Length: 87
Image 1: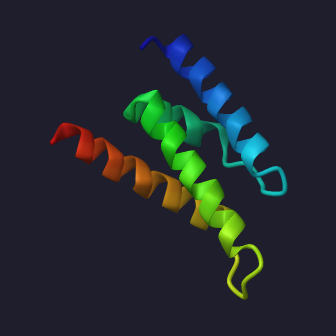
Image 2: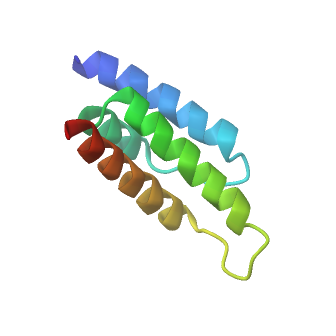
């Protein structure tokens, strides 16, 4: 993947985050560029989707997920998915 493709992919991922979690802050653009450079696109999609799902479940609780929680959870899912793909 070229740097231009990575930046374009990162922007698409940023738009997805905003669409799935419209009431949440967005991570820094560099976070999406980093994920795009480290993980396959499908893995990043899964991480963002799972984080948004968990965030929705936690919203009505006494301990809702912060932006940092969402980013860390998404990254954790991505790492596990990438490792599972290597097996």
